[in-house]
Length: 206
Length: 206
DNA sequence: CACTTAAGCGGAGGCGCCTCCGTTTATTAG
DNA sequence: CTAATAAACGGAGGCGCCTCCGCTTAAGTG
Image 1 (cartoon, chains in turn yellow, cyan, orange, green):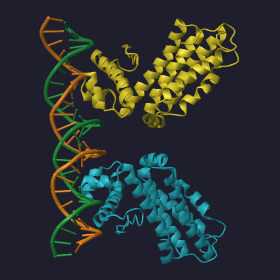
Image 2 (image 1 turned 120 degrees about the vertical axis):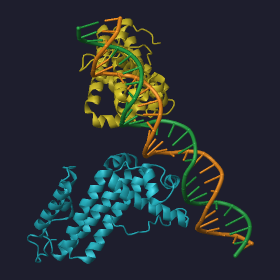
Image 3 (image 1 turned 180 degrees about the vertical axis):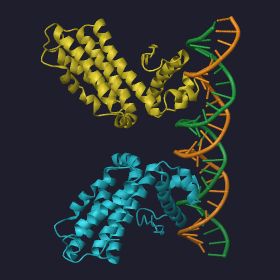
Image 4 (image 1 turned 120 degrees about the horizontal axis):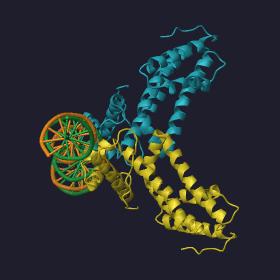
């Protein structure tokens, strides 16, 4: 959702793209992310091209199939989520960082849901995708949880996989309109539990 | 592949169709089967309608999605395969019937291969499809094997599931152009094995 | 700077999907 | 047989997919 133009790098991999090509490519990914978010995975590729201000041919040159585009968008989403862990850790007390990151995780899952059908196809084709991304996500979570435990802002008798496990409710019961709110409440609830019995006094939540 | 016009019945289920509607529906299924066979599962639905001599609207009225049509075609294929078991059993000695049926089974798998991608989607959606059909197929095989054992035209120390298991090689190593020939040879080989040590003298194969 | 050239652009065009609705026709009632 | 009517037909039209290729332009070369 961050509209910030983070120049996608594709860096130093094979041939560097011509400046205009790189610009168009980045633009396409950015636009695609928001179009997929608002219209779902079956959004018209022509609309994406149109909104990005490029011809349909350009879209297809960069992303020969819909799945290619989806994969890049998805990886970027994961990238953003993981990067957020570091940033939040710097700007906030460790427990607040963890909480906010988990809220962002809810958003991420929301996207993933939308992409689910298409991702299922992708995952059977491209088996690295799932392991790559889920590895990175759980590493980000570990970083935050361990920091919070070390600082004593959450209780010490849990680790990252416990927290991930506790969040599993977010994955499962889906697609009611209340889902998002319910999930946000779940995160808060979980945080209260985590703060209870922490070494340091608690920072109040939101 | 039997071009015989077997009137599809849809019998006595909800409202009976108007005569012309029933005719068109049957025609569509028949044509779809051959078009899918020759062009693969992604064949144009418009071509199917064209070849069946009906408008595209008619096709969509009867089969609201491609998957609906695929499912009906597939079920019909299984139907034909299983019906063949009975017919072959009447016209041939029991061991020959079994052999010919297995050869036909090879054709069936060949089709199934073509449909595989689409079927995978179907099967996740419509879980009865797979159990229905695989049940019927293995029952047909049981009928033939048991008859042949009873008549002593094949050895007595095997049952239907052994034979099915022996055919599993047909499922696996795929999609080379030699596949069909290799599979036919596998069937013959298997039959020789089955006849060896049978109570009665052997009918020669093919 | 001008020139060259290959990388990149983009949209027309052909095809398939699917819906919608005016027209046709099988069926039923009289 | 005729009339009424509901069922079914079918294809035009709008949209999206994807390819192909003539045009444009960034990036080197001197």
